[in-house]
Length: 447
Ligand code: ADP
Image 1: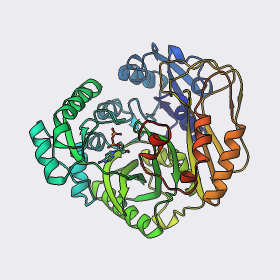
Image 2: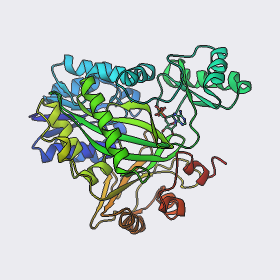
Image 3: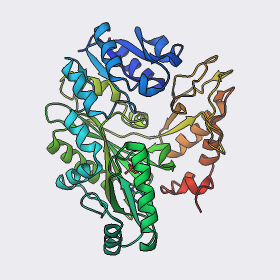
Image 4: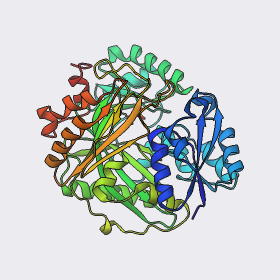
């Protein structure tokens, strides 16, 4: 087991990892920018090292500074959390080259899944169902028109280096191809320094359903069921639930087995999430995330497993302590991502937290680094808290979520608590009847 882990992240996820480490008897090292000197992840850690000025490029993405911090403090391993360096194959390699353990998959698997075309080709080889589309990159408007005619409009062009929906454009007809293609190309170039695009059939009313996997270095793989993350705004997830109201047991078992078989063949290790669109009873692979995800707590709530603890255990080389039959999904869980944003305009609203009171009681979990008197710096992501509520049934979970949102007080800044209150009161949500376009229609972004 590791004696000391450096957590290369900030905010709620740094706290989440710190908690797992301390419960395992592992000391923690926090790293922080100058803007985060008073942050909760720094206050709770056993040691902390300042790694640079506020911009993430000079601090949380500064590989040399993070590696130096790990060396100086004598950490044995680095946990990257999500975002920042978590899917950076070069960083994973550098960590290993320094004789430390990267708590994550191999650099090869990170690289493979980070390139969307290679990821899709790999998924196809592994027998996972794909969205119909180009077999590689599309390099001209002509090619888009030809493929569009072949698989049928509307189609979607997406960035090979993609992430967060940037460089993604729907093309309704051949007439729109040129404008959309050029726009997607320049967006991808600006966001990723890579303007390579690929094409997929645009699905009109899918749900986003993802399978959580957990694998060790010895060929053991289990899946922990699915999460439904269809409620998205600008391709960012807003609320997630498990299990999905749209799946039945046999669909769940079938896709779960396909994914675990695929991961076993791949020789994958660590935690990972295989993402699908699900429409009219069919699954379509879209991508794989080779890291811990924001929404992992809903899976923890219905499996009663500590995903981060298991992730750390398998990173030490220990075998998984469970087989698929040990995983029993119980009850229902929902996570609301609470952002420091105006709940109507979504304009970010960082600032000083004047009052802070978290909901509690049976089945209620709050993962957040906020505290009363804390001043949120403006440099980072606006997600400030995750409220995760579970119950024996979806209905019990919904009632509990409603009262928990009522109890939650975050004073001094605008938050999206009010959006969640409106959202969970809507009959479509109560009925579990929504797809990936529903939320944008609800907030008036889409017709
Ligand atoms: P990124 O890596 O940029 O997040 P993804 O491939 O994960 O891109 O897709 C992000 C989101 O975009 C999905 O959750 C879904 O809402 C939407 N999307 C992706 N592919 C399609 C498609 N073929 N048809 C319709 N919507 C899609």
